[in-house]
Amino acid sequence: MRRKLAAGNWKMNGTPEMLAELSTLTGGENGPQILICPPAPLLTRAADVTLGSPVEIGGQDCHANPKGAHTGDIAASMLKDAGASAVIVGHSERRTDHAETDAQVRAKAEAAYAAGLTAIICIGESEEERLGPDCLDIIAAQLDGSTPDTATADNTVIAYEPIWAIGTGRVPTMEQIIETHDMIRTKLTARFGDAGANMRVLYGGSVKPTNAAEIFEAENVDGALVGGASLKAADFQPIIDALAAS
Ligand code: PEP
Image (tube, rainbow, N blue to C red; front, side, top):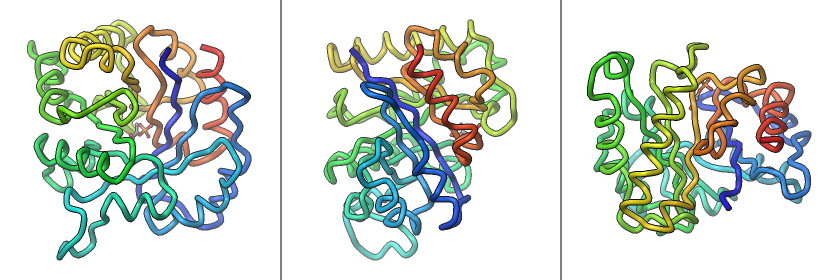
């Protein structure tokens, strides 16, 4: 049984005052896992605010190396020390802004494992790729190249995030979501066996309180990675509730 996960990515947004939003989030008994990934400088304070609550804290990126001369970067172990239980790797904004490759994303995921963090590995196609004939093959190749051989159901979550759906208010059709998530499940199971069958696969891209319930109906959607709608508890809580009810 795969435990549902509602993960929020605050990106480069958030103030200390906004941390109060976290303290009101509730998951209910045996409810979905709730994770919020604030900007790194807020991690320790976020960990303090959520102590004893159902909300876990995660990072938005980590370096592939455990330490060294990498100005501005953050080691996975530093996120762990700050109270994180997970880290997002390979978000499309990292891939675009910092030209991150599948091999680099895979190395970051391995660094996350070494630090005892769950890696949330993001994959997803551009609009042009979605309109072309090879869309599923492109996503499958990203999945393969970005996921380490040592991935397990405990240390890895896959987030399918069509780039054209992130922050745009546009979402794929349910047919496209189901087809893509089913393909990802098939690939994971072929490569990792039971671990692949039990690995969680999130959908991300303009998930809102208004569309969450329908998206969560898909068998191989185990939750969501949410950007904009995770910034306010009034938006994120209904998404958590829709996941709990799915
Ligand atoms: C994201 O940043 O991963 C994301 C899915 O953003 P949004 O929910 O705002 O589309």
